[in-house]
Length: 234
Image (tube, rainbow, N blue to C red; front, top):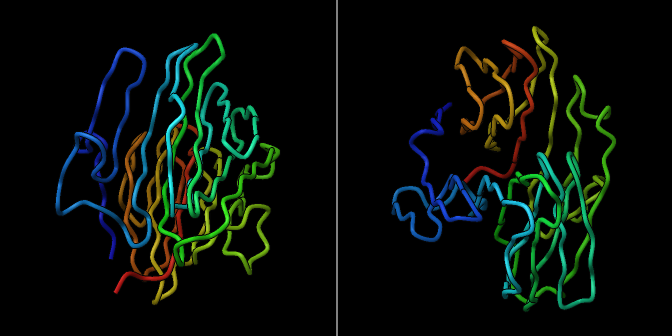
């Protein structure tokens, strides 16, 4: 099963300092038929203006990942972590039994990043933070495995049966992605355009895939795509 989600139909919020596209119900965007995709509860495509950001606020019992598309993202938390990551890098925080954090754009250019929230395998984990500077070339024309379950082998590991992969595919090239019969995946067209099993994705579109292998082809320039792969939602 393949289902395209046009970015024009997604939820939106717009403030002076923040413009967001919500893939699932979040904040003022409410749709009881669009709350989650499996254990993927939140996927926000945020643009944060320079020298602004999210003040310190609490989280608990959620695996949170932030993938930077452009600009710089500075994270601070109650575990005394503080780190700035830039394009193509990923931050991870397991909120566990409770943590406070902030996210700011201290740069002079707008920040665009994708924030993903995944339900953990259980409540009450010890909070933790991590980040990784993935070389850009590691995702050119190949899937870069950034996140895996705890028993996996990706550089970042989370408390859930979820894999996060990214690719920057050059124009005209194709690559396969095997979504097994008992698995599902959510693809985000971050930049550029692609055709997936005959379905055209424009920048910021998404594609829900359930139990079906796909072939992705970059068209009209490169295709920067993020894939969230997980156990199928029964």
